[in-house]
Length: 430
Image (tube, rainbow, N blue to C red; front, side, top):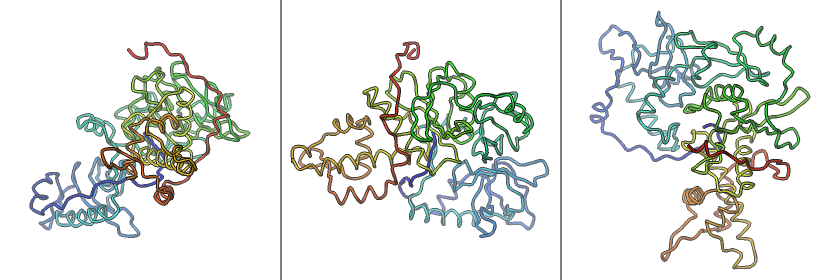
């Protein structure tokens, strides 16, 4: 899953590792330059490379691939998420990387992580075997850029595109063209222009279920608009690391958020949802396209998914695992929603009206009790005393946390939603 980054997640600081133990544990190949001759850099080697050339910022990388004459290397930056994997010139590689240099850089990063508590984990919940298989199959991006409407986007990850567009063994596509209305893929700009001259469509297939100003939401059935939804998944995979839904879109509904103008309805992002979820998930995958991130659409999409849950009179939760950005956005949304509700309750004059249970908060918000408890624990306002839990709704504590939750995002007006829950067949549960 994917999303806007509205804050930083917390992780426990790493423990100090004795130098002897660290050398013993680190069995990955490293360029050893104890001799005067520089050894050839091989796939799998760990070396230093310039992250920001102008700042002479050396970072550890893993060599994922290289071209035939070793003038370019495809690298994974150890300090960053896989979305930053890229081809770099050999001039940015330290050909004299030693274990001592690597150790110095790792120690500097460890101290920095202890100070900032940063984590770049993007695969929480995936099994080790699944993770290894996934990374092996998708380790090198197959498209560098995609033109989508008036935007040219740098892709972040590999996407298993239709074979007529790209297949294993093909060269990396420097630029791919996509119609923002039909979501068709084209290898050349001329092909896209010919399609646009003949294409009358200016909005996603399906029903428009929400319109508020220039923001619109369409509900698209994966079974009725299979190719469109599959292509949406291919597009999403370019910006989500662990998304597996590409072909089997039939059991899903897609809620596509658009900005509308005189030219048509331009896709901003979307979330998908199972037609019938045995686990009461109200969201399967979420994405805000990069050009629309940090505009408040991430929280809008989350808020909209819960607005539908309220209409269904259900408690909902997103499917796990969440992406790194998705987790940050959800934690911020849950915290802000609960804190505002607790502040409202704590301001009531009648003492009895200031009593609220986690179950009642779940009914008010449509959050699951598990998500509510986890959020209150994370905020350290769910406390235990004399054999029972209670919520510490001290106004100063609530205001302190609210200042750190970010804004509301693009608001959802429930009165503008024109939607009724679907009656689904039990075949989606088999």
